[in-house]
Length: 125
Image 1 (spheres, rainbow, N blue to C red):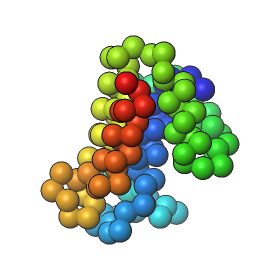
Image 2: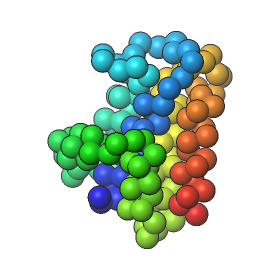
Image 3: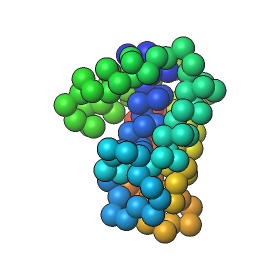
Image 4: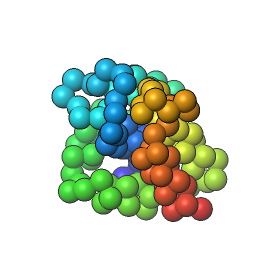
């Protein structure tokens, strides 16, 4: 997996985390990702990873049996990247987390999202 694809996958995985209460419209067919999070992922793709095809993204995302396996493969793909690129990954994840209001949390970032972002940050150190 290339680092740009890993950036997008980790960012989308933030959106796909389960939340007790969603206060914004969910993406059609989704159990937790909101339309705002999807729009933010599109913007991140256009700004940072335009060379990654959505077909590659979808195929790679679907190949993993679990979110844990998917995250581990992304971490492996990112381990030798520069600190600046790793920061872009974490910033992209936070942008997706901040895209929609969940659990009436004023920061827009749910506890599940923050925990996941922290896990990835620690794994990339």
